[in-house]
Amino acid sequence: MINQGYWKFFIGLAIALSWQSSMGAQVKTDTSASLNSIREGMSSEWENPRLIHSLALTTAVNSIKFSPDGQLLATVGTSQIMLWDVDKGEIQQVFPGHSATEMGLKIAPTAIAFSPDSRFLATSTWSQGLLSPDQAIIVREITTGKEVLSISESDGCRQILFDVSGEVVYGACGLGVTAWSFPEGEQLFNFATKYPVEAIALSPDGKIMATVDANVSGEQSHQIQLWTLAPQPTLLSTLDGHANDIAQLEFTADGKRLVSSSYDGKINVWNWQQGTIYRNTNNLHSSNGMFSLSANSQLIAGNFHSSGMTNLITGLPLRNVMQLSPNEEASMIAFSPQHQLFARIVKSPDSDKFLINLWQVENSQLDK
Image (cartoon, rainbow, N blue to C red; front, side, top):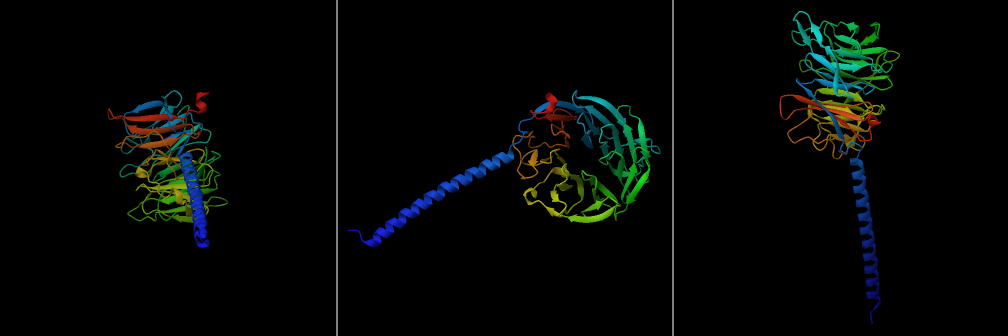
């Protein structure tokens, strides 16, 4: 006869085995759910997009930008700006660079900006060595190429932006930022910073401007400054998180995040209102600090190691997104404002030419 102690042992063992089996099943279920969640986070409409155009360029491009209506793509070269018709894959307009009369040369724009209604294109440039531009800022009507505004600044302007109404033009000029009325060109205000301004970004509601310093003789704070623009420009706060020169600044379209990159490739995604960096995107690195944000504020594209795009919310790389060869990287990238097109410039593998590859998602409204 089995004594009472043995009965207790067998009953306890049976309970333990039952509990272990139950826990194992739960762990398996949780693991499966976690894997499914990761797979969903890595999937997007950009899996296996369709290449609709591959446009050849004979020279390198300094910057690219889609018009707000998504119909044009501007590419900036060493001496001219080309406007491409996105649907046709053809050049629609060619604008010259900025003039330097004393040297008889053209200076490439350092920045371009479309007006919100896509009717005008603004370009800016600044003094580089012996080359001093006649005009720091030029705004042209796109259909006619006519200059509708020209602004001279002794040191030029590194960056140019329209406000959300299209009635104000901002320039990062010299020691600070200046605002002019458009198209009148009347100076509205300016505010000075300690060092020349390298880059500026405007929040979607037009109320907040982010600025970063230029690297002048090694003196730079690597700090982002946030300014309220009304009723007068006032320093709101500063963001510290980069150890090297900051290359690019941009707010997401919903205004919730501010993305910054430095030339060493580090990308920070900020909760700018709280002054903190989102941890799940803390490992983002893109060659030369290059990135572009999607119009729905969900994705960031760049020269990332694992994928051409990453989910800006989860930090997960997307699957099957226009993979480049191991020795290849994009020199310029841009999302269209409609989130349906993506442009990427790469060097042609068969020649010294550069290619603008235009990719389209299959559910694009452009097909309709």
